[in-house]
Amino acid sequence: MAFFGKDRTLFKVFGIPVNVNLSWLFLVALVMFTLAEGWFPQHLEEPSVGLRWLLGFVGTMGLFACLLIHELAHSLVARRTGMPVAGITLFIFGGVSQLQDEPPTAPAEFFMAIVGPASSIFLGIGFLILWFLGSAVGWDPAIVALAHYLWIINFVLAAFNLMPAFPLDGGRVVRSVLWALTNNLRAATNVAANIGAFFGIALIVLGVIMTLQVDVLGGLWFIIIGFFLRQAAMSSLQMVVIRQQLQGETVRRFMTTDVVVVPRDLTVQDFVNEFVFHHRFSYYPVVDEEGRLLGMVSSRAPRELDREEWADKLVDELMKGLDQCVTIHPDMDAVDALSFLRQRDENRAVVVEHDRAVGMLSLRDLLRFLAIKIDLEPRGSMN
Ligand SMILES: [Zn+2]
Image 1 (cartoon, helix red, strand yellow):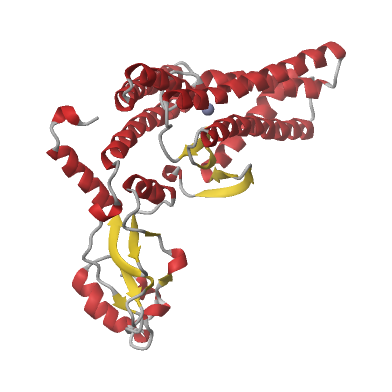
Image 2: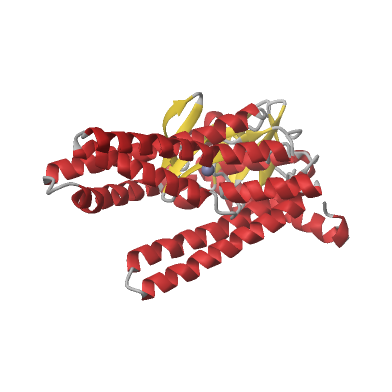
């Protein structure tokens, strides 16, 4: 979810990190407000402000617990079928499980996709029974109104996710069926992603109509979700194409090997004169006397010091240690390297072999390599 800024890990369940994005707080506030000012005043007889907001808080937490169960179901099945899961992220549109690879088989994808909505339906039925029982037996109206909200929202969650719009769960189900029928993941993704993009546009149109018909807030929400869905469909398709093109390639194939290393005991003044002004790289590996990699120094790092200090300070005071650098091995699989960079929100990594910096890998190089490869290949043979 780099698009929405950095994620933070809240806690771990079954070893799966649950991350939140800053944008999630907006959704929390929105849900809590709608519950405290809309749902509970409508379903309870004149609740006090304190009670409404307390219930709003409990309802919001309940919703997110249900959302988490939905995502956990996806993640646990994904892990079972051998797909690594980087974590679950809660963000402005709900939750998402971060899979690090495409599903291994069509049935695996089908099962992985369907357990999410299935768990939401299961939860919905549970709360429906509670609500029914509670109203019949005469429980506290606050509890009944809470159960009422939770069964409805779980069914809404299941219905929304079952839309046949890739990469939503329903779209994944469609893709897995097409994949099983055609035995061609790329063609299946192409169809599913186009349906997803179509749904995105349909939501945008619906949102515009709603906006014109007084429901401005609801309409805007649909428009935003529509854009997001369309974007997600297109980038998932891109990822499949990229993964297929990179299959079987190693980092060594497209790393740049003209690495310019900086000795650790160089003064900052000499670093600026002899390296920054000469080479125009944005990062330089820093090495010790034997040429072993110690860390990286940015060409902008000298700005952290006063100019008078440049002659006395050494480069190793400005460098970031290895623990803060993204390093990869030249024999690493290219697809793994790509997801490794994306996960860490990084554009580049140092390629290290036997403690030495042997190259640099940047997303730009990867993309250039892909463009050339696709360009050189005859059209029909890209599966
Ligand atoms: Zn889902």
